[in-house]
Image (cartoon, rainbow, N blue to C red):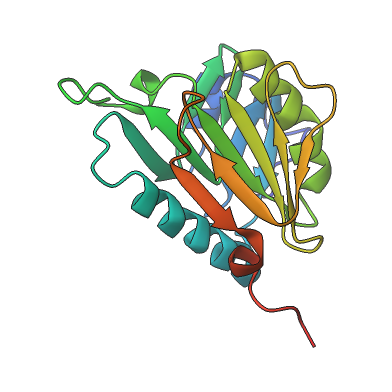
Length: 188
């Protein structure tokens, strides 16, 4: 991006963030702090595609739920715009969202850890998602081969290392996923 603090004004508003030129980097505003993330790794994208496939299958025929991937401009408050790797929203089939501002708070927000994003995903973004009332926030750790699942009131996450199930309304799970398949074979 090459942004110099001495020659360019800092990005502290959603309007300023959205006015930035497209550099191929992912830009977010986390409680008024501008965060820039490079393109994800191949391994990150492999896990993302597997998760997306599992959600697409689980939500087949459900017109009230939609799974999406970033880039997306999800505004959670006037100083916070996030781009979760993958997220699930509730939709009204008669009036689906026509822009990102119509999406609202996701039911599930998922971040797949990368070395450059781990502290932000576990720190600032976790607190933001919890404060915004995101139903579940999943931190997917491909290296540890586990998922940390957070709800808005959690002080500590639920650690999932074998199977993940998701029931958006507390009823019958829509998604049941064996984590060994998500992460693939163990490296030799």
